Length: 395
Ligand SMILES: Cc1ncc(COP(=O)(O)O)c(C=O)c1O
Image 1 (cartoon, protein in one colour):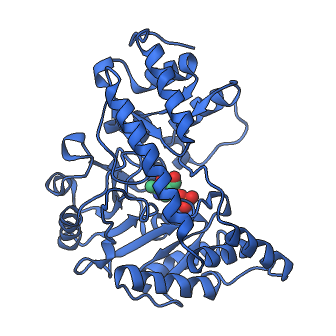
Image 2 (tube, protein in one colour; image 1 turned 90 degrees about the vertical axis):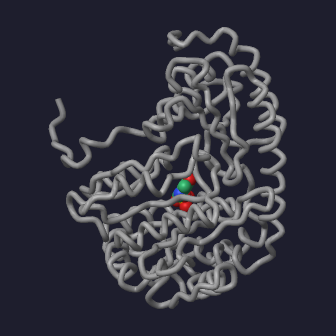
């Protein structure tokens, strides 16, 4: 029996479905990981140099709560250049510990007990637990394969009630690789305006799209700037996951309470990491272009091979670095299949159910792994799959 009681709000939160699988894999030799959601690239040298220089120059102190002014200014320029949006560097931009903290801060600062928060299902694993941690009620917006894994605005509308307060939108999408079109976003924006919702637009994969697919910033739609918190990150675009730098743009009315929450919880983001982020934004961008070209090569390999495997079918992902394969034909649960593939093929994938109830029947494959490894992983999967019996619990 535990001696101390934990907070009641945590009792509703289960550990991530991915963790158990990953810890199994950790102790196995010769495993190929198609599970992790982080680029397998090293940030470009000028970014690493900037972090080292910051340390050598004695920039080892607290920064201001909002983040160093150089970074906020560089981000304001980026918002203007890429989306035509103007944000005030003093009151409308906050530097956070990755996109992860930006999302939590937004929910913490803006959710009251029993407020309903619309979240994508399947969706990124933190949304539901974050809403629960702030005593909100998560309400699923189904993102079905029939609709190319995008939430249908009419269906979403049917889930909106008088208690709905926030809607989380994520494009390009984790786990499905979907990228929402201008029309898709316009209908969600219209709904948000009509129902007076605050929108958290998780755009951390904004730069990672393929085949000329365009990403639109949700804040640039009519009447959206005043209600949208745009969440961005250096993790994916510049392979800077371990630096933990993200940011949020939004109207002062929404950023001020987030700033307060940030000040009294983490104080500020690591200074040297922020200087590295400035270098990433202001330095040469060829690294990003090359990384995306390599992701594209892997995407085509992974998609082509997945679609050939009997029992799997897979839509060509348009963004991020994930393929979400339909495995319903094989029967059994996605967790059962992921465990089987780990034990028999030594390949890590993530069961779709880890991303929500509507993810059941799918497996997420990350292609943030070397091209040759992806090929080998699929060879292995193909070889063992004939032995898969839905009820088999391979341990
Ligand atoms: C959709 C989405 N949003 C936000 C994040 C958070 O990333 P970070 O905290 O590293 O910026 C991730 C990371 O996997 C993600 O997939």
